[in-house]
Image 1 (tube, helix red, strand yellow):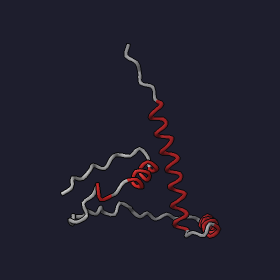
Image 2 (cartoon, helix red, strand yellow):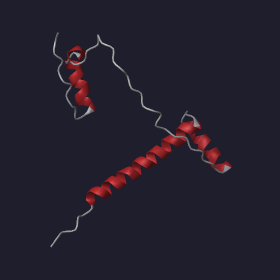
Image 3 (spheres, one colour):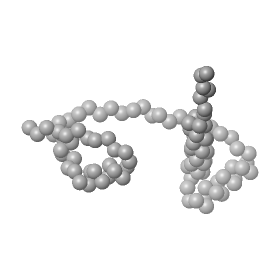
Image 4 (spheres, helix red, strand yellow):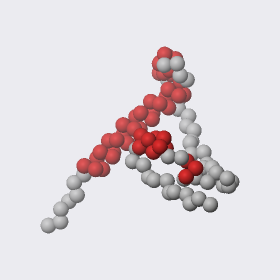
Length: 102
């Protein structure tokens, strides 16, 4: 029986793609045995938001122009806003100066 090689850690997606193009998956994973698959619970939650009719109409118009559903459009916009705030929080956390002890 052949010993399996450990799968390396990759620094980027491109590095991983390059690696798997050059290597055989059979050297790293055993496919002849069944394994137990664990599924995570649904990690999403639903929220209801009410908009004034004029705002809702505008949101629907923009979503239609982009050829996507209104819920998808609203979700995309909220995720963009969250990313922006997440970046700002990350930036603040890494630029804080720690008080010196004198």
